[in-house]
Image 1 (cartoon, rainbow, N blue to C red):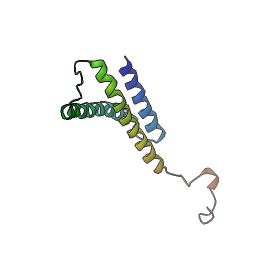
Image 2 (cartoon, rainbow, N blue to C red):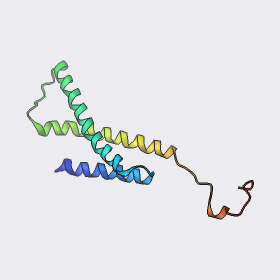
Image 3 (cartoon, helix red, strand yellow):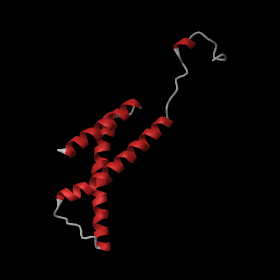
Length: 110
């Protein structure tokens, strides 16, 4: 149940971010959700490799433990992607110089 709420929250956050910056809303909402799952997958693979190399002795049958371990990894990756998109889109703000109060003025005076 917690994961469903997280997915909704992540999708909605990316949807609103894309909406604020005039990007394709649904593509980035889905990208946010997919990034959560991909980061959890990559984190699990790296954890498995670390368990084999260092002999951590992780109980792979305990799904609650694995979920608790994967949650911060996935949320960290989602936050990183969100921050990168937000920073990149803030740089690309288009300032419209054709304002309503400038109608009728010479282009040299603007």
